[in-house]
Each structure stands twice: as structure tokens, then as C-alpha cells.
Image (cartoon, rainbow, N blue to C red; front, side, top):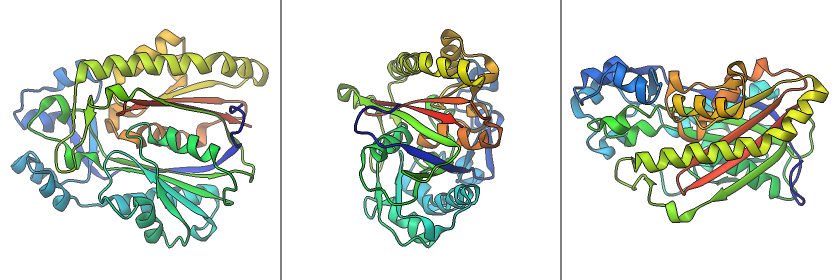
Length: 336
């Protein structure tokens, strides 16, 4: 169960959206930035990603100017957020008018103000409060943790993470160009309307001394200290997962359900290593990073969305997400 003072949350529906344009490893190799399909697979396990940017734009400019990237984007955060939001609402069997609060966040909001949540709410025709809860790639976990701490939640809350981060990626830099893809997630939650999936536990923590290790300046490119960040991600994801496993396995023994693991979708090889060390079978490790790359805060919830219809009664889903800050969060979902 959640710690004392935390509200019960019910997850009614999840949704996702990925743009159509594909950046595969061959395209990155053809940019002549010192990378190959083999080089990328050996380091990340990623085969392709999606982008809101035209491929011709990337060929010509390598996105050297992030302001030009903002202008070249074929889809905005608001539009991808609207599409993912509609997907989640449809699964929940609800209309935009049923939503009483919108929460958004992620790595690359388009504006300083207003809140991205307000802009997405407007696009969906939702007349309700909106606020952003940003914690980089761990935003989805942070948002659920904050909601669990809130009192007097409205009937239904829409949580959206619109992550179109390729707009701030430097495609002259092979170390970062191979990582990122664009994706948007959405989730509909309630504090008192029951559903088959419950959020029974959330955590949120950070180590602010590492705040400079992963950055996106207001008018600059994404940058990170790769080796230090990877060590942090592996160690922290492992710790979050192992802390949740005993209770999850105890429940699974009683329900005859599965224990499913979803990590932050940053590196397929890293996630596989964490799952193996924790004793999670390959068929219980859910992921999409090899097809969509690192989609920031949308990564773990888009995996959940893509697996939504396959969740079975008695299953327990464990999410462990990490991000800039340095921050991390864990979430336990129980399927009735």
C-alpha cells in the first residue's frame, strides 16, 4: 500500500501517440557522424525512433539551431498531447468534459508559460484547472506521487507527458543523436472511482548534487555526462525494482498473476541487465525502447499503454523511472 497520508488512485485508461516519421539506424549512419547500425546496437540496443521533425530538415541542418527545430516541427506538444489524451479517454470510456484536472510535464515544454497542461486542456475542450509537474524523465512517477498526496481530487484527472525531444537534439553529435525519439503518453486516474487497475504505491526521490549531469538549456541542445548518468540509472533502477519485488512476488503467489517490470526507456541493454539481475523473466519485462528510442517521461507509460489490453487479473506492474535532477520514482500497479 501507499505510505500513510497517501490517497488511493485508480487508473482507468492509458493512451499513447508516436509520430509517423521514423529515424532508423541507417538514416543516422547516412548523416556521416561517425556511427553505424552495429555501433548503435552494441551501445544502446535501439533500432529506430520517431520524430516530429522532417527527415529532409535533419539531413540539411543536423538541427544545429534548436530554434529552427521548433519551427520545423510538424506536430506540437499540444497536438500530440491531444491525440494521446483522446486515446486514454476512449479507453476509460470518458469524455473531455468528465475531466476535472489536467496535469502535464516532461523534458521539453514548448513555452515557459502558460502551463502545458492548460494548453493541452484547451485543445481537448476541457474546462478545468491545469498545472505542470516536471521532473524530467521521471515526471510520470512524480505526477502520480504528487496526486497521491493531494486531497479532494476531482472525479477524474488526465495526466499527459508530451515528449517531442528530438527538437533539441544535436544531430552532429553521435552520442546523443542515437538515443532520442518522440512520443506522448496520457493516463486517466481517479481518487475514488474504482477500476481494474490500482496505483497502490509510489515513491519520489532525488539527488540534487547531480543536477548538472543531464541538461537541456532554454535555447540549447540536450547534453549529458553519459557514463556517470548510465551508472546512476542502472544502480537506481535496480534499487527501485528490488525494493518493490518482495511484496509484488508475495501478491503474485496469492493471485497466480505475473510480476511485470517497466523501466525508463533509455537503453535496451541497460534494462535487460537490470531485469536479469532481479530475476525478472524476459516475457515479464515490458519495453519499447528498441523501436521508439528514449521518449523521456513518456517512455514507461507508453509501454504500459501498448500493453494495456494484455494485463490480466492478478498481475502486478512495477515501474521504475529515473531522470535529470537527478531524480527517480517507483510505482506499483495492481490489476484486479
